[in-house]
Amino acid sequence: MSYGWKVTVIYILSGIVIGVIGGGQAGLSVAYFLKRSKLNYLILDAESNSGGSWLHTWDSLKLFSPSQYSSLSGWQMPTTKQEYPTKEEYLSYLSNYEKRYNFPIQRSTFVEEVVKEGELFKLKTNQGVFISKTIVSATGTAR
Ligand SMILES: Cc1cc2nc3c(=O)[nH]c(=O)nc-3n(C[C@H](O)[C@H](O)[C@H](O)COP(=O)(O)OP(=O)(O)OC[C@H]3O[C@@H](n4cnc5c(N)ncnc54)[C@H](O)[C@@H]3O)c2cc1C
Picture 1 (cartoon, protein in one colour):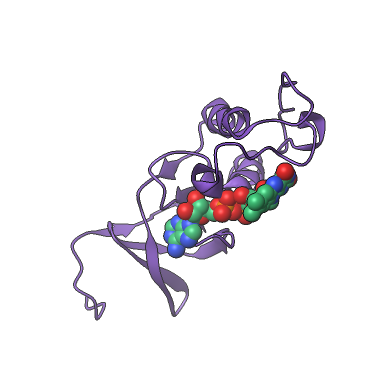
Picture 2: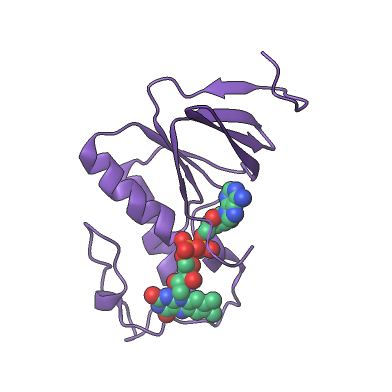
């Protein structure tokens, strides 16, 4: 099988039909509904930790919405000390959200290229090539 790339590892996501690219808020929101639908999926996220682009914002940044309006689906964000959650509080919420639902996330995995071949998508990453039937792009705008 030739992929035209120098391939170190090929992950055939057998039974895994959906590859979600990006594990920020959008990726986690999609994952929540994919989990409920019982579909098999895997999130590939470039970051080494949870939090998406919030990992790279300045420390004094606060959300512009109170916690009750900043929740992802399924789990209300806990009330914060001040009306507007701090970056640290928001990162904590995103991390706990991931743990709560035990989403399958592969971190430190940057998707460099996506190619459709026949019925399948090939995702070339720094960790090898992943193959899935469907993809969701939740890469945000920060990168
Ligand atoms: C300064 C600022 C303040 C904001 N304040 C608020 C607020 O108060 N309240 C609010 O609701 N929203 C706020 N937002 C908007 C929103 O919360 C953020 O933009 C949010 O992080 C968007 O989530 P996301 O999942 O779309 O993208 P991101 O958080 O950027 O997540 C995308 C993820 O995909 C990964 N990724 C990207 N490309 C690849 C790739 N090729 N392969 C693998 N992984 C990849 C990234 O590393 C990242 O982990 C703010 C935005 C900004 C910029």
